[in-house]
Length: 251
Image 1 (cartoon, one colour):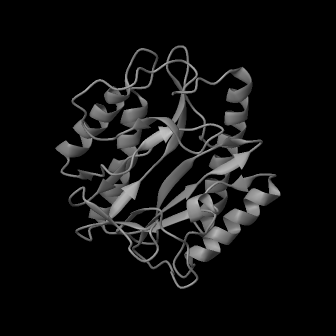
Image 2: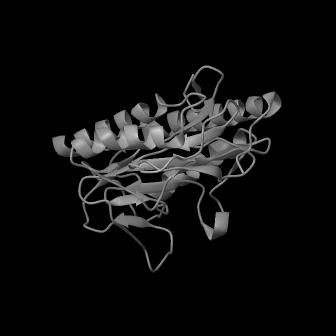
């Protein structure tokens, strides 16, 4: 069941989304060669607590840290580690989801670390562009598959692999709600968009094939099967009476 948010809930979603956006802004200056992903996690955790919120990923189904740090060929759900140091030329997706007054704000961004190869930089730029292409499809009366197909049309034409195993999702009081938001071509009609719906659009885009594997040791880390690099961007979006509002934009 898709939960349509009322005015009071939307205000809480706006506040949680604003905090998520500010958290990504806060951590950006620390993303540089020589910094460990655990340091990034601890800084984000501290910031979240100081703002009167808690980190949704921490202990979610056993996830051990407060943010996800996905470096290079890690697609998503990378676990911050003291031994995992950023190097010049890396890319890292940082995914944050603070819970403020019972509601979730969910956003992520892929950062460039130092001097990145042109091919990798293009992957990052195109992934962000794909997210915006999907967001532009959000309005009452459109369907989830309009988002999926617009993203696919752009990315497939540029030769990328679009991850199929993981998708965007509804969000609110719960971390994951209906509807699911796939980012690859759909041949069937999916959920019709209505005013008051809130969900994430978060394409995961691979330089190679779309296939991924999940770590057998930690049961969380998702990597590309072919070892090629991957990027992701994410915003939480509200369906308005005329279109959309992005709840996780920095002010």
